[in-house]
Image (cartoon, rainbow, N blue to C red):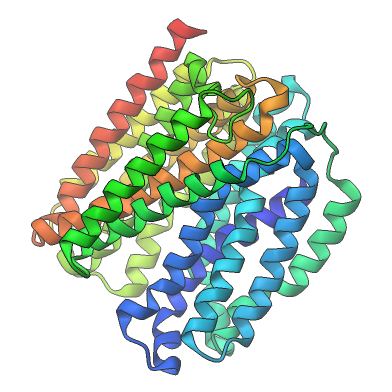
Length: 435
């Protein structure tokens, strides 16, 4: 579990710290904001395009092997980022980093399942959720501390010693799993990369108004065509890359839908709130950082508790209670007065975070345990894909709201996020009838 925790913490932290370093990177390489944002986008795209193929590869060659190779590629990519001398080189290095992170994300759920006995699986999933929330919470602070004493290259170079140590721990400790005899489906992997890659590039262009609208819409349409071809191909296979076989299991499908909706709700809030605090409520950057802290801290406190409870109480009930709390907290945040005090903001933020944490670990446990053990890799890959898809969808919606209603974008985003949380709550409760 230490090996799993260090790897996933490094991957989550690296997604967060790059945002803080963008101004310094753009200044050093004399790049425009539109060019520098690809330092973030390249990493995210590589992750989302690699998750399901690498989860499928884990079922064939072993989850341990994919995790260790992913960790090694991530570490080498970090070194390449630190040594980059221009923007194109840095973006290519970030793609390599993202592919390595995808290997870590894709199989970490399966490795948790092979580490913990079934009766204690909720504890392992809760610990995993705790690590993710803490890494997300401290990411900006860690980046700020490193940049206070050194150049932006240090943000990437620091991964090298941690990656080497974690590789040694993982090589000695990570569990072995059975390997499938089927060859890797390269055609499906290519269609998967086209579907996810074209969709997120096109959606980002539409919401930000970059390039021609015709080209952006063509990319989105091409993404749906690739997805349709992929699903049609996968429906004929015994162990498909896109787990259409698992989506026929009602509890698994409902858990995936709940996860996507809930992460979309959280992303809507966490992307919109900094603008809300600074532009609408007039808070400083330091105050904004403090006001954002209660959410991930509450997630970190609630997730392990909910994970333990999920070994005894149905996730459908725990998820409904948590998501109802998330919806209430987001509605309260959307209705804050302009003269709101710190405590008036902090407790709805904590309520939202605790609600999300109370949902996340039980839902993840149910999603992983509802799949056959031989398909643990596909279940873990789908878990990570649902998370990334929800986060990307929320960020895209916030960008769209800023484009169509710039003066009311933040409250709209929060209310829409509350709506997603309510939908997720009832999707979670529906699982009681499917047990």
